[in-house]
Amino acid sequence: MLMQASEEKDKQSLTQLCRDVLEKNQRGEFTIPAEGLYPHQWLWDSCFIAIGLAEFDVTRAQNEIKSLLRGQWLNGMLPHMIFGDDDSQKRDRNIWQSWRNPYAPEAVSTSGMTQPPMLAEAVVRIGEKLSKVERRGWYQDIFPALVQYHTWLYKERDPHNEGLVMLVHPWESGLDNSPPWIDQLHLHARPWWVSAVDKLNLDKVFLLFRRDTKHVPPGQRLDAIDSLLYFSILQRMKRKNWDTEAILARSHFTMQDLAYNAIFIRANQHLRDIASFIGHQLSDSLLSSMEKTEQALESLWDDFYKQYYSRVFISQKLVKEPSLAALLPLYAGSISKERAEELVKLLKSPNQFGSKYPVPSVPLSSNWYKELGYWQGPSWINTNWLIADGLERYGYTNEARDLREKSLKLIQKHGPYEYFSAKSGQPAGAKNFSWTAALALHMHAALEKTNNNN
Image (tube, rainbow, N blue to C red):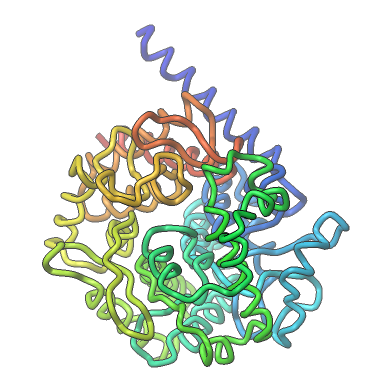
């Protein structure tokens, strides 16, 4: 009895802590990821945040999503960052210069690229908290923007009508420096100035100008030279005025990213459900593209290694560098039960993703593995959330429960950090991280629901 009371007190304490973090990081109608390190609004961050907010404040969750749509471009693109108009963000606005593109919004400055399409998921999770009448109105409000975004992805990011959308920058993947992207980055010629910085060992000087390493240790962020290479790609894209066709004409660094396409498949499923609920018919061309994406995902399967990989857009070669993206087809929900079983084996394998504090962003046996190296080792709560959701829908309820419980124990012990060591549980990255706090609230609610059903 005393143990139950203690556990209940711990749960209440965790819930209050997470709500306090979300309150602290609120900026008007939206929520920043973390104080100092992340001062802007991010696309998939806000989607994850809205999912957690819906557990206790549906109106605020709705406003979180609506605030994202103020940054939508006229062509349908949803940018991965929206900047404030105050002087403190002037430097970032000038780096991106979204106004170079005629489709960019006039009222706000944004980045010139997108991020994983989590919007439909967030819209549906909010809808679940509403009455049928309220849900219909909510879906009708957001539906046009959703359709426009998905249509843009197929029109501009699937130029060969293959079904898989391609990304033009690693930041679009959300898993910024995961092994597939870094592997491909190192295969391409460096700009002369990056080579000079490396040769003259000036990378430490560059650290003086980075925002991220002022808030967290350099070893927990992107390598300095890789970060400069990412910046050089951004600069080339800006010179092309963020125009996809112009970028593709001279770019060979493009990827049909596994994680992104898996998330997109699930987003498409949600979009179909939303359309059905409000009595709208999606166009035949969009429905055809959606079906083709589910089929095309199977072209990323490697039968020897029994897993999925990302693929280079130009050469159509699989990039056989493992990362947790291999598990995200579970979240997509479109793969066969046989292949889902193979992915669960990867999840449980001690040499792969079966860590003490799951799920590592890179297999434990990988040469890329770095315990606290951003997307090259640590466990992230948002990807744990995606994997747990997929596990549950495939019937792996015990595995989903275990993953959620272990995630919550990490947060309960250390607080809602950006990420954690998969081996020791050590917290790392930004403190008081919003999506960690938000998804802890949703995971807690999901466990409560599971326990009540049992």
